[in-house]
Length: 239
Image (tube, rainbow, N blue to C red; front, side):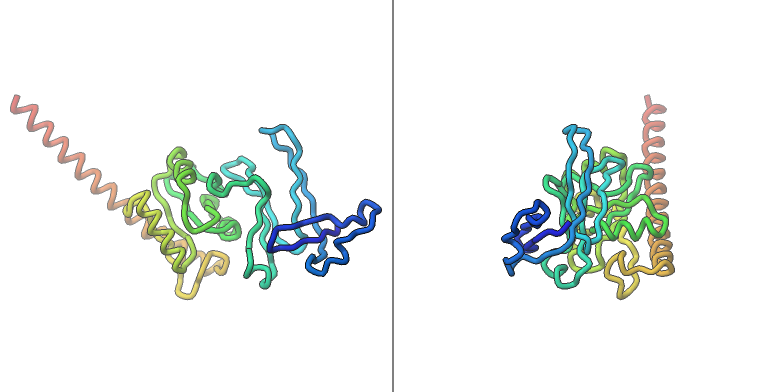
């Protein structure tokens, strides 16, 4: 249906002509007119139908947190609007308490910033990836991973200043030894820019580093266990 909106302020009003009325918004030059979609979703927690409205000229999709529906996200495909704001979320949605994606099937998980970044991983056959919808992971998001048994993070946050800050923050809350940086090729800013062959090369390089680090950690743990065993044996013989 036709709708009038003012993107910067988030104003969105259905055209009154839909209701056989004169529409004062049609004459307001500060409001633009565009077509909108309305999607309905039944919320099992509140036991009510919720309506989500998104623009036709946007790319929209559902946000699923380990199998649980959390809301909708809409990303503009227009460069002019993108400079103001890339993503829009439905009312009541909380980014801080949501991890978009699947996790817990492995002890590691890939972490990306945006919804579309995650889709690029999925497109290339990697399902074990979550989007934190920003560059800094929240305390609630970390707890979700901890509760799911995830012990290692592969940071595929953007290959820029914010992505590096986000990776350093992940190291500070998970431990440096428990965070592996995704091996971006030179000139690649984020997962959305990766072609299949490029992705395969970067993914393989990253997993080589991850597997090597895990092997070294296991050897170190075995060494500590052997020392403890020898110490206990020696104490037992001296009694």
